Length: 117
Image 1: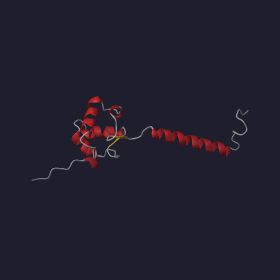
Image 2 (image 1 turned 120 degrees about the vertical axis):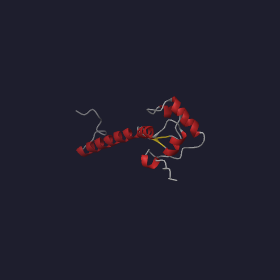
Image 3 (image 1 turned 90 degrees about the vertical axis):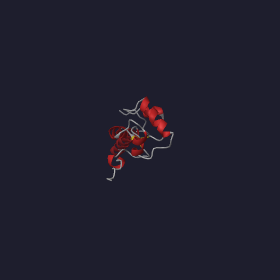
Image 4 (image 1 turned 30 degrees about the vertical axis):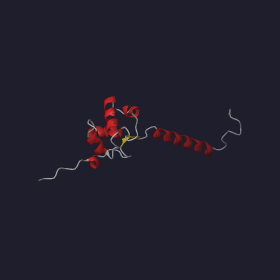
């Protein structure tokens, strides 16, 4: 027994399959949107505090350093904000934090080695 009016009933098994696929695709898309990246150069104090490992003290340091200009890359962030090192940068990046749209990569953020005299 169908409770829907005839005009709303799906008439073929193909229609039902298509509806299930569309529903599944929509659910997957919505789930992917919940884990959007957080750009450090645009994030508010509340957004920064919301990341695991960043509390009020560190978010304050980040915002204070950002007043001198946007962070260029992860290495720049680590140079300017005391308390952010490679291990924490990797953690923050894993939680969705980006610098100029880039996730943390140890190879890209490596500081240049000192040259021998």
